[in-house]
Amino acid sequence: MPALSHRRRLAVATGIVLVAGAIAAPAGHAAARSSAPTAQSSAPAAGTPSPKRLHDDFNGDGYPDVAVGAPMAALGDPESGAGAVSVLFGGPGGLSSAHKQVLTWPDRPGISNPDDARYGKNLRSGDLDGDGYADLVSRPWAYRANGEKGTVLTVNWGGPSGLSKNAMLLKPVPGDQAYGFGDLAVGDVDGDGIADISVDDARLGGHVLHGPIDRTGKWSRLGSFSVEGTDLLDIEEIAVGDVTGEGVGDLVILGFGPDDPWQQHTYLLKGGRTGFSAPVEIKDADGAGVGGTSVGIADLDKDGHGDIVIGHGDGSTHLTNPAQKGGALFISYGGPKGQSTTRKPVWINQDSEGISGTAEAHDLMGYSLALGDTDGDGYPDIATGLPGEGINGIREAGRVLVLKGGPKGVSGAGSKEFGQYTAGVPGAAEAGDQFGAALALGDYDGRGRAEMVVGDPTENGSRGALWIFGTDATGIIAKGSVSFGAATIGAPTGRSQFSETLTD
Image (cartoon, rainbow, N blue to C red; front, side, top):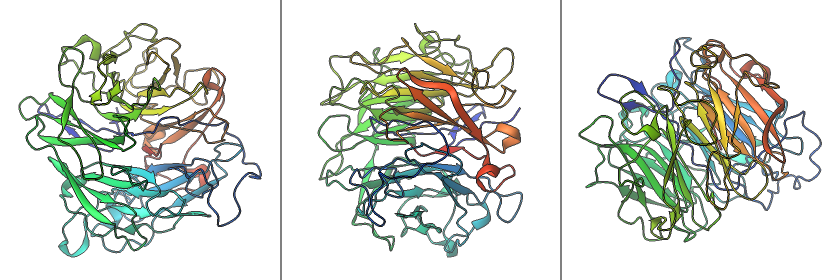
C-alpha cells in the first residue's frame, strides 16, 4: 500500500508519520471549463500586465494559472528527487494540457544537494516585486552550499511569457532548514499593498520578508513572528488572510503541543504596519484547542471577515471527539477580534447532515483544502480531499467533497462528491490511488465560477496524474472532466509524484 505523499511531516509518538498540505486560498477564487486553448483576444498588450493583478497570474493575461509540483522528478540520480514544476495557464478556454510551461531548474548554484532538492515540494504564488506578474515561491528540501546557514527559498519570476526558466535563491533567511521542514505563506501582512513572504523555522517562530522583493533576491525589510509562551511545541502549518476585516493579512499558525503527541493548537496573530499582535488561540465551541493538516482562509458568509477553515485530515482511532471521526473540517467564523462572537465554530465530517458517506478511521477528510466560489453565487465554497477513503471495498481509492458557502456559513446541504468512480470522470478507482491528495480552485476561464483541479501523486505507481473539472450553475460537475499525467505535457516522467502540490 503506497504511503501518502505529503509536503510536511506531523511527527507522533507512535511512529506514524503524516504530512500536511496547507492551502491558504483567498476568497472568491473561481474556475473554468477545460479544453484546448483558444485565441486570447481579451489579453492585455504584450509586455503589459492585466490591471486585475491576480496573485496567481504568472503571465499577466488576466486569468489565474496553476503551478503543479512533481518533487520526486529525477534529473540526475534516479533514486533522488531533484523535483520539477509545471504551469498550466488559464485563458478563455480554461486550463488544458496544451497551454503549459515545464520548469526543471536546470541551473542550481548555491545549494549543496541539487539532485535531491525536491523542487516543487512547497509552492506559493504572489506578485513579490509589484510589477503586475505573479511570481512562484518554493521552499525546497535544500541546504545552502559551503555550510551557509539559513532557510532556502527560491523564486521563479513572472513575466509576459510565464515564469523564469531558473529559480533564484533569495538571500539567506534566518531560520533552521534542518530536514527541509517548514511552511510558508504569501500575503500582505503589513497593509502596504505588496505581498510579503511569511516563513516559519519549524519551531516557535519565523520571519517575514516584507515586499517588495527585487529581482536580485533582496527584500525591503525583515520582520518576525513568535508563538513563544503558547501551548505549541513547534509550528506545522501557516496561512495568511484577513480574519479581522481590517484590510491587512493576519497570520494563522497550526502546531502540536508539548505534552500529548495528538494535542494540536491553532493561533491567530493579527497583522499590522508595526508587526503582529500577541497570539490568540482559536478554539472550538466547547473551548477545546484545534489543529489539523491543512488550513485556508476565505469569507464564506460574506460578512467582511475571513473565516478560518482547518482540515483535520487525521481521523485515526485515537480521537475522542466523534465530530472528528474519519477526519473533519473545522470552521471558525471571523470577527473583529478573530473568532466571531455571533456565529459559533463548527465541525463537519462525513456523519454530518447532508454529507454523503460514513465517517471511518483513516478516511482523512480534510487532508487537502481549496476555497473558491464554484457556482458564481458570490460565496466561497470548500473543496476537501479524502485520499484515504475506501470505495466499494477498494482501500484508499480516495474522493473529493465540495461544500457550499452561504449567508449562514457552511453546511452539508447541497454538497457534492467526486472520484474516479463518478460517471464522467476519467479513470477507475484503484487501491492506493488516494484521489484528492491535492486540490486547487481558480477562475481559470474568467467566467465567474471556480473550476477544480485534483492532484493524485500516487496514481500509477507514484507517477501521478491530475484532473480538471468544469462547472455549471450548480457548481463543480463531472461532465467534460479531463485527466493527464506528466508525459502528456512533456514534464519529467517516472515516479515523480506529479501533482503532489498545486498553487491555489
